[in-house]
Image (cartoon, rainbow, N blue to C red; front, side, top):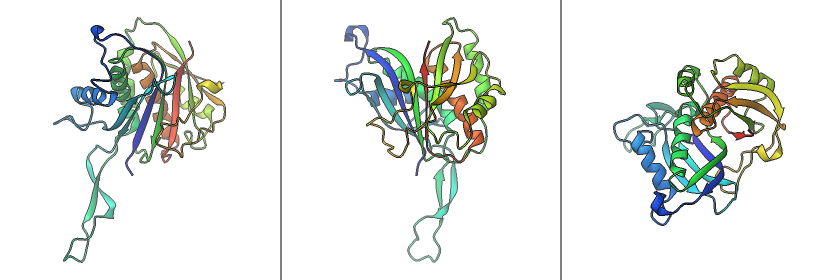
Length: 274
């Protein structure tokens, strides 16, 4: 199975008239806009001549379905280098042995998330004025993590050093599978040992029900359990933007998968509280 990410945006989308440059759904849909933005920036598998970060599966606005969900996007991560698989290809007529199979390596979620969420946010804003209150990432069929990408995440911190937007506080919640049997306190300790710049993680806090993991009716993955301990992690961000929220999710995911590299299916959410 291919590794998949399903990202949902929460908040409000206020429509505006076309004279202000807002895309009409009669002319374009979120899938077409997200696809075009992905290709323009060289992020998707449709971008010729550039190493991709994802392959687009679907994207849609959900404002007419749920008052608090703006939209969602689903992408596949198996867009990396080709590698042999344990399973052979189908036997070739006239030969005793089947050739070895090949597949494309999956991109690690923490590598794809910053660009993926920024592309998602950019695309949503073509349809109106967005007030983003939270993001949820549901991951399925992930491959075991083989290395940490903390170095890449730390190098991205310079982007936030010159922010003038002001501090924001948020809560990170997750389903029971995310920590792979480890505790919330262990996750906080792991995050606090890292260089997180202007982002401050911890302490462990109680998560109100409205900020907990939800599995929406549009989610394609029914076996993700919304069960959770009722605890999460607080985080202070230098700004509340799609980039900052994406960086938080990528760092938390990298830390959690470092302790539980074989967890394949989980959901994690970040919600602004101030």
